[in-house]
Length: 92
Image 1 (cartoon, rainbow, N blue to C red):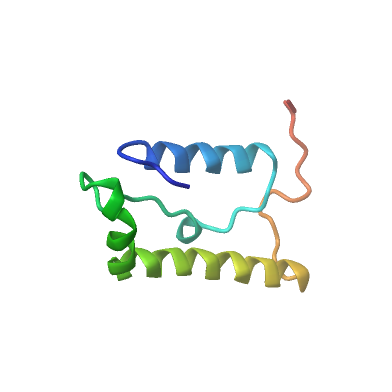
Image 2 (cartoon, rainbow, N blue to C red):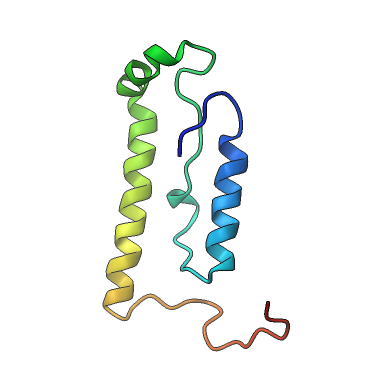
């Protein structure tokens, strides 16, 4: 997602909650990334700041790697949800 000045953490939480509400598979904290690149700098140079922020790029790559790993495990039948088989006593 893209945020200009504030809200990256809140939006990450909202997306994570939405994923949970839809009963999608949790991949782990590594797959949830939020942060700011070029904070308080002109928008026109924000893409340059992103190109230079190698740590943030690696965090993003790690999120994609974690997701890909979960997909591979799921397709191989090796990913087990901790709540699989439990009935929700208060479904929405």
